[in-house]
Amino acid sequence: MPWLETAPGRYERPFDTIERFYRGIAASGAHLGKQHWLVSSVVQCKHHISTIDLQDAWKSLRHQHPQIAASADDNGLNFVYNVPSTEALDVWVQETLVIHSDKENQNVEELDSALAPSDRFMLYYLPHSRQLLFRAPHWRTDGRGMIILQHSFFTLLAAGAGRTILFDGSEASQLPAPFDEAAELSLETTPEMSQSSDALLSSLSGSIPATLRESLPNTIPTISQRSTIQLPQELSEKIIRASKARGQTVTTTAHAALFTALREYADPIDGRFICFNPFDLRHHLPPPWNGLAGAASLYHTGKPCSIELAQCPDFKSLAHLLSPFYRNELKPLFGFLVDYMNKLDKILAAPLEVAIQGPGAARADLSSLGVIDNYLHTRYTGVAGTFEIEDWFLGVQIITRLLQMYLWTRDGKIHLSCNYNAAFYKGEFVQQLLEGWKDVLVKELLHIA
Image (cartoon, rainbow, N blue to C red; front, side, top):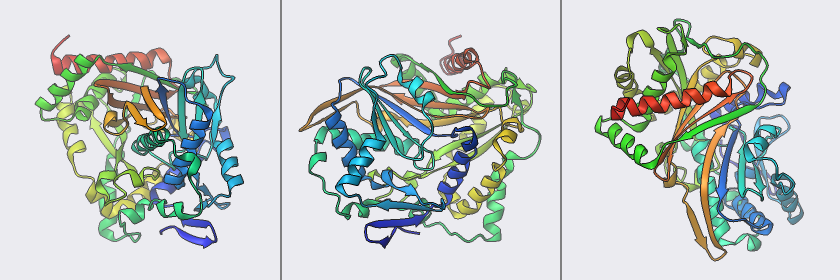
């Protein structure tokens, strides 16, 4: 359903299918004060940004993307946006833009791990390190949406227009359509739709999935952590060219390399790997939701994959099997997405303590974010000055045995990253896995041992 004004200055709509799914996932760790898949992204700025400039840009971002200030109603069924008074706007800025001037001995990743989860879209700034931490529940945004919002933020920061913006309710016209509406999904399920969703989910059934021997026996999650490696630009360019020369995407070859690196940790070693990989759906939506206007909304889903290791003995066979997984069109999924997400919700609805111990819990999923420079620039210039970005990364909080792997290219360099929970894996193993992932890419694509 679309946004409706239910009282003067109050706009509401029900949460849509994908939002409800991710809200359920987020709620699974609430009793532990944790939130699975909470999205965090850090921007390293070249120069210090003043408090007033940050506040003005944050207000401007709310005006351009008002959904970042919407909240769930008391029963948790509806998304609500209230047009703010001047006083309410100031309170919102004070509560959602936090400047940590007293955290000189804390880096941004330590801060991210220490912060309690929030249902709000938050922005933190560490002046001593010039780092901005954007943080939001996954039911609010996805990786691509977060990146586009950051582009909007820096565009507005450079423009310096926040002090003249008037919140008079006109900004509500920029509340984005929920995915169900933007994609014109059918909310009714036919037998054909049910069969299609069953077929897609069938890869999650069958023999018990392989686990990872390096997974620790702990049963209670602790802190979420991140490990990463960056490939040199020249090496990255060679890998990208070699992937294209094979007629495969970088994501395909990188995923095949990841499975190859994981194989030595599989138990059983000839078992079955499963994964559930996210896909951005924006480019399948009509204007304006396929661009800037849809940045603050959740336009994203996941697709399962199953790999029989005995049938894919090497990198080449893995890449061949994964090629159609990434090349197949996602648009046909829209025809049965509501039924698919509802069934997936039931599959993943087990209590957290059960899910942590369940078959396939210790696995690696891959999220490919593409070329970051296509969405977030290195430099933004406007009447308020020039703002440059030195570094960037994105990840999610993990409270299960999942290894959430990331792949992206920025400034010509390939980045390989992993978010994991320290209760279930040692940091040394994760770093070893990342190095092994890189080594397979180099060996198989460039034939360098």
